Each structure stands twice: as C-alpha cells, then as structure tokens.
Length: 465
Image (cartoon, rainbow, N blue to C red; front, top):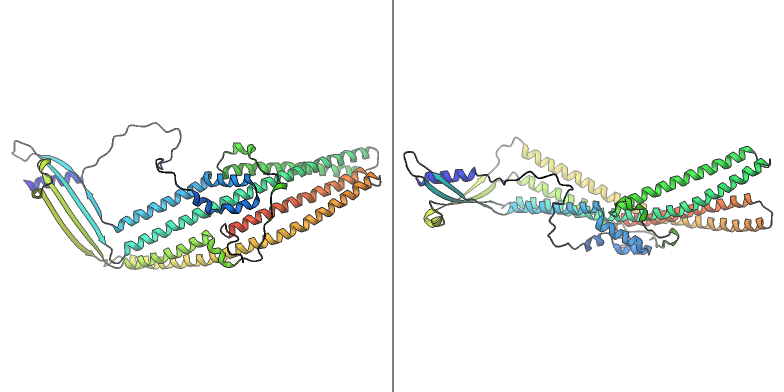
C-alpha cells in the first residue's frame, strides 16, 4: 500500500501545473520598462570617463559641455547600449550556473481509494532531486569564459557608442554654430545682390547697362536667395538631429542655445605624429582582441565535446500519511547514483563542430588584423586632416586679411569718387564670400579635432611624446 501511495504522489507531483488566474487587462496606454525601479541608482561616473569629459573643456564652451552631459545621461542609443551590457552580464551568470549543482524540490498531496475499500487514505510527499555534472575537464568552465568574453565585448560596444554619440553631439553643435555664421553672411550677400540688381536695373533704364548684365544680376540674386533657403533648411535639420542626440524632442529645436561661432575656441596643438600603440585605446580594437580569445576558447570546448561527461544525481522522498510525521527518518527514501556518458556515434557532428569553430577562429583572427590596420589608418587620416586643414585655414585667413585690406582701399577710392558704388559693393560681396570660406574651414578644423578624438578612442594625447 505504501508503494502505491508513493507512486501516486510522484505522478501527481510530475503532472502538477500551477497556473495563476489572470483577468483580462486593458491595453496599457503606454509601454513601461520592465527593469526594476527599486534598485539603487547606479554610479554613472564611468560614462563620463568613457568620453574623457575633460577633453571637451578645451573648447571653453559651457553650453557644449552641458549638451555632452545631457547626451551621456539621456541619449536613447546609449541607454540601449548600457542595457545590452546588462543582458550579456545576465547571460554570463546563467552560464555560470551550469558549473554548480542544481536542486529541485516539490510537494504533492494525494487521496487514494483502493478497490474494495470503504475508506479513502490521504498521503503527502516531498520529493527532492540534486544533479551535478562533474566538470573535471573544465568544459563548463570554458563555456562560461566564452560567454564572459561576449560580456566584456559588450562593454567595449557600450564605450564605442558613448564616444560616437559625444563626437556626434560636438560635430553637430559646431556645424549648427557654423551655419548660424554662414546664414548671417549669406543674408548680407543677398542684400548686397539686391542692391546690385537695383542699381543695374536703374542703369539699364538709363541705357548705361545692358539687359544681359541686368538679367545676370537678377540670376545672382535668385541664386543667393536659394542658397540662403538651403542653408536654413540644413540648420533646421541639424537642430532636429541635435535634439535627438541629447534626448530631447525635436519640438524644442528652436530653444537650443549655442555660442556665437566667432567666440568658439579653436587652439589645439596638433601633434606631429602619434605612435601606433594608441590604437589600444580604441574599443573596437579591444573587442576584436576579446573575440579572438573567445574563438580560441570555443575551439577548446569543441575538442572537449569528444570527452565523456560524468553526472551525479541524488534523490530523496519524504512520504507519509499525515504532515506531522512527514519529515521523519522512517518516512524518508534516499538514493545516489552516478554515471559516465561518452559519445560513440554522432554522425560526424562533433568533428564538423570542431572544424566550424576552427574556421570561426581563423575568420575572427583575420578580422582582428583588419581592425588593427583600419584603426592605424583612421588615426593617420585624422592626424593628416587636422594638420592640413589647419594650414589651409591659415592660408585662407591670410587671403581674407588681404581682401579686407583691399576693400578698405576701395572704400577710400569710393569716398574720393574714383569708383562707383556698384564697384564698391561688389568688392564687399567678395569679402563676405571669403569670410564664409574662413568660417567653413574653421568648422572643418574643429570637426577634425573631434575625428582625431574619436580615432584615438577619446584620448588623442595619451601617447604623444
């Protein structure tokens, strides 16, 4: 009778499914995060270390620094990158659990009425099972190490995302400020072309200017107005992008403050050369190195799949007709067993898996070499662009100063009556055109500095002699 009750209890426990009753709930008005809000707020200072926040102070622009901080804290791509790290961390913990024993327990009540009996007997059972795979070949340990490399790689992806977003914020901010300057200059050019057209129209009526020249002046005016509209469109689009970068609604684009482009500081000492060792700062280089290590571990795991596995299992059952005597030695059944299982025939799956992992290792290794070369190329490209664009800007500034001196000379000639007003305002337009070029090249130099910052993993001066 006791054996029958025991079997019935085990059957009832195995088939027992607990399904919570849930009423139909209305569709939520908005999605909610499933991440616990009760946890202590994490320390986010490491995020500012990612982007080397002190480097951005070289521009001496508090507005820019504030926007960088807003992006670090509010940008949604960065939030996703951080959550991705948490996902890989939990995967690592889940894999580590395979190195430890597992234990399960249950509880099952039962009522049994035997054929021919007039009464019903009650029974209670508490089964417990403990399982453990003896990891004497460290196969499970290697699997955990492999997943941990993915976790470490995700942290490099997170760092790369922070550097990329900070770079995007800085470049977009400078381009917006530059467009403010260029739009202001273009408005002056449009006004000048309007004056030129008006003068040409008046001279044409007096027979002093041909109709063809008047039409040409009108075309220049229309082109200037079109260019002005295009510049304003670009600025509006950049402002919308900038809002998204710092985690704000594009509806707030009109409220974005920025420093006057003329007041932006650009005074970086460009190094003559940067050692190739600086690429070890780059997160993509570090991740490529981690992936090579992971691929090597995966090859080890594939080899160990040929080895036998040793499993130990223990079971216990407390079974009694009443709860009071359930946990007593006379109502306890215990058992321990062990076994060795080894693969005999897998249809070539284990060999194919090993070859697959070796091929994966070779591919990842080649990607590491490519990442190495690409990183050096990007550092050199950024360094060359910084140096050459700065030299070009210096030459353009010289040209602007010469054009400015020439304009003053023509002002004197106009005051003396030796040239017409039309000639003077044409010289003024040339001066404004050169000033636009100076502003564009200054913006290029500032974005070149950010490119060098990004190419060196946010630390362009760590290895400079």
